[in-house]
Amino acid sequence: MNRILAFAFAMVPLAAIAGEVKIVDDGKKAVVTIDGQPFTEYRYTGYAKPILYPVLGPGEKPMTRDYPIVEGTPNEANDHPHHKSIWYTHDDVNGIRFWMEETEGKPVKNIGKQVCTSLEIEGNSILTTNDWQSADGEAVCTDKRKISFGTIGDARYIDYEVTWVASSGDLRIGDTKEGTMGIRTNPNLRLKASPNHGNHTVSGHSINSEGVRDGAMWGKRAAWVDYWGEIDGDTVGIAVFDHPSNTRHPTWWHARDYGLVAANPFGVHDFEGKPDGTGDMTLKAGETMTFKYRYLFHPGDHDTANVAEQYEAFTR
Image (cartoon, rainbow, N blue to C red; front, side, top):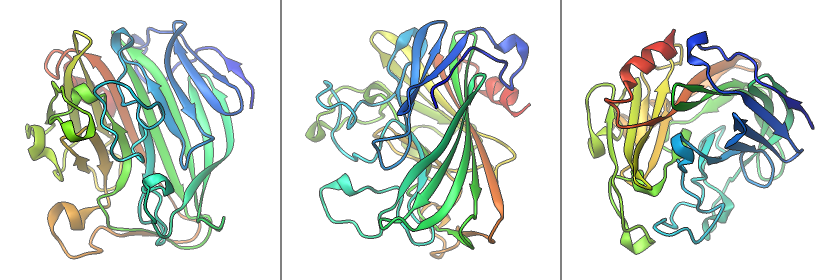
């Protein structure tokens, strides 16, 4: 897996590409730099699921929480240790739980894990395959991911494409709010502090594509969401885009005031109060289903970053 490949064009307009992307894989993680500066690392060993950590945005600002990968960072809450920076998973896949983890400090039944079985680097992209396994190693399904990196002006982006593969028989993705394309933001971007958990200072605001703001965004459908606030003296933000080709677009958002933001097309029961199982989706053996998302780490708030226009460019 040890490869070093320089920048190649991403699938974005040529005018949007400015930085030189390099990816180095050391057999445990793929380290991404832009113009020689750190951006992120795709860590595919050592955790219950692959994660992207750290994630550095404009001005090298840390865009995600350190905990639990690194403990003791001032002003960080020590809750939800399964919220590790950026990840993709779901908590009911053929009855196996992949969102929750065994590190919760309490017994959790039916816990699964994602195991990376291949990884290649192609230009500015990581191409990887993962087996979703039960605790005893039984295969549940497979996914194929293409994760691409680049810049748009002063902003940095991560394009995250996931293809589910029903590789072990029929696959049921269950109706639960605990999923799927998730990020736990820098604590300064939280909407609400939690002193009891160690978080005392917040400056976050948020809005979605429908104009819904802050805590009211939870469970609502939208094409995109944006969180912004002050980190180390500068205003920066994180926009997350749901591609129009995705099943059930515009997706529902498991977007909490404590910094969890997750696009979830399956949790209809929780989000809309409909009968349990309404959001279930089944793939027959051998079938596939693809989802595409973009994380845009931008300077300024959603207005100065022109998030709505950036989303339209993403859809093209």
